[in-house]
Every structure is written in C-alpha cells, then in structure tokens.
Image (cartoon, rainbow, N blue to C red; front, top):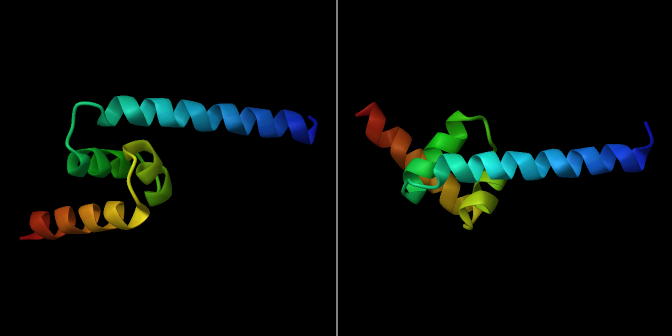
Length: 71
C-alpha cells in the first residue's frame, strides 16, 4: 500500500473517530462529554477538538470530576 493511500485511510479514520465522539458527547455537558470521551479512550487533544475547547480545559474537567468521585 502506498504512503498516500495510508495517509488517506488515516485521515478518514480520524473523521470517523470525531463523528462517533460528537455523537457520544452531543447531549451532555462539556464535563460529562469530556468524561465520556475519556472513558471511550480518546486523548485530551482529540477531546478538546471535538468539544471545541483547549486541552487544558479538558485536563481540568477530567481531573475535577475524578476528584469529586473519589470523595
């Protein structure tokens, strides 16, 4: 398989991941969406892109939610 074909496949898979992530987070608050997407295995960068926020915000939301659940 040529490199350009691999790049095309990777790009299409990235789009599919984002579409599924948007569906997961669509009816949730940003905090719940970030948590759900983290549970789905997405990294902070991808979650931030899907939720239209920054990686720092995602990190803070997930950390705060984790702290509340530990109490």
